[in-house]
Image 1: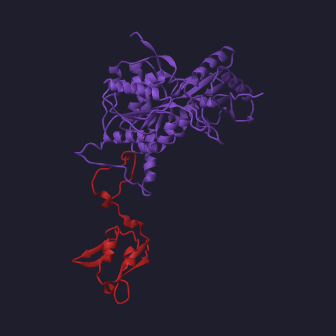
Image 2: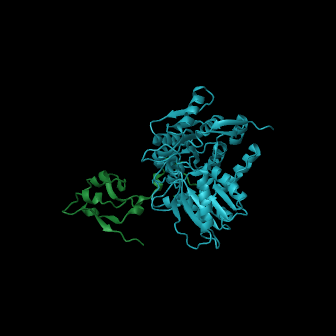
Image 3: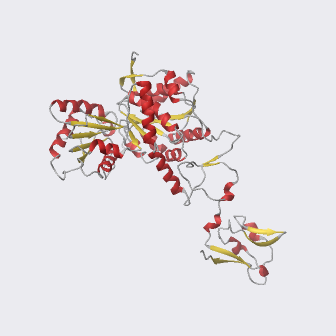
Length: 395
Length: 98
């Protein structure tokens, strides 16, 4: 079969995925850089290319509330947001996961205010990392498209039934044209399959009530159950990825491991920056520096043991975070450190903050962290574990 | 009705049977127990009127006691009790739990 490559933006790719999936309900509110995707999808609705009920609401809090209502009503539901929009959904994110709503949401990662900034930053999704949502992260439009299609299968799996957010970098991916391959409509529709509602509110023959009070007697057990369900996502995500490979030829693990096997140094980074890192890793390899990369795809739940297996043999690892936890280590670093701590042999760890609010991440930044790891590998206690890189210098 | 412990198979905030709040025995919350002394009761039924949990048992128009499965021990009945012969018919006593 001949591959047909198409030049599209990330937003076009995701709007196209939603057109192919044709969800029952989509409640959304426009926010840069997500607007362009939902606007394209609203064209599909207006042109009659999908049967989706598009709910135009007055805020993201309402968008997520509408999605939850439609989901418990018995529909397949999708939405999308960015940055402050995701922040405004925060209360309802926990309701969606607690109510076991298999909602799929695209997140075009954007910085949080203040100061006001519309550009790429992972603070939005990291703020939602404890909300009980499954998180898939995507390097480019192809991965975002593939992840969004797989997300429906993971979310709607009868043992899971949890919401999934699919993250991709705002502007860098959402608004930049890249080359990718679409699947055909019928292949996507067959893969995603028919939505099977579970105890829907609109099944008036079997009336149910949603959202009862669960207090000190069983809330604790309820959350334990949610935690257990999250732990079973690994197997489901792996099985869905395997099936997806059979229709697409593209293979996805829980994370991508790039030239790590024989490496001495490693970079861990999410989303689009991984591309720049891989280029620079190839260059460093030509100069005899053995460096590799680990790019998490499934960030929630986080595959600690498998990540530790992939990294523990290294001399030094630099975790690059595109968000900060002020006064603490950044979110991705914390997970990598937690993965490696139980291992008897483990690398020296560095945490470097890059690219906040869309600051360009350049090849020379990768080169600098590779050099830093080389210098630090022999030391027992590195000087400064967390540091901002690519800061402007005022002379 | 025996309470089911929530686990992965029933972790879903859905109520499937109507009227199942009856299964929630709020009497377990009680620390003060209402004590009824019939000889001081004027049968005004203010206790029945005020009880927020429908826990005053009235038979043939007569106050007969409490439904301790649901009585939370709030003490409103004792507060409202008009009594007779200068004494209240309902008083609250610290509950001795086994």
